[in-house]
Image (cartoon, rainbow, N blue to C red; front, side, top):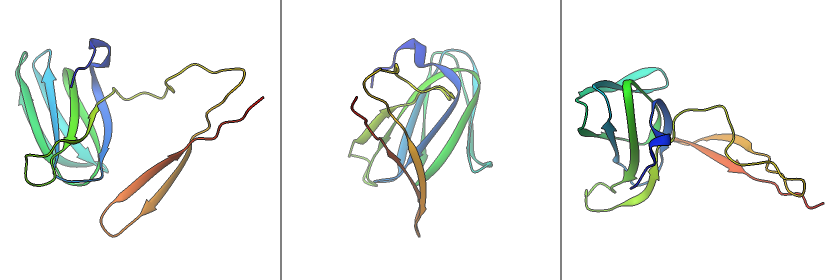
Length: 132
């Protein structure tokens, strides 16, 4: 997974919903202590030396990852056997901004809907497009 330097940061939010365990690999640009929480509860923490990486193995769930230094990362779902690479995704730093540029002819309206299940909470985004 290739990530541009602009995707480095100190705070990330992500979810793992299929084929756990989810392998979250981070690379530290500076000496960092990386903390992973779920719902405000500590899941794991790791000191990572500048110029090295670390991989966290996480179950299904939604996570907040913070770092004392600058890091970059990605997530894959390994399907339990460790030899599967599913749903690879770069981790983007936390932001309140929407990626993209508004258009005069189309708009994107996200609708967030939480649907609890017996095993996890799924988040669904629905996009509506309106023609002029």
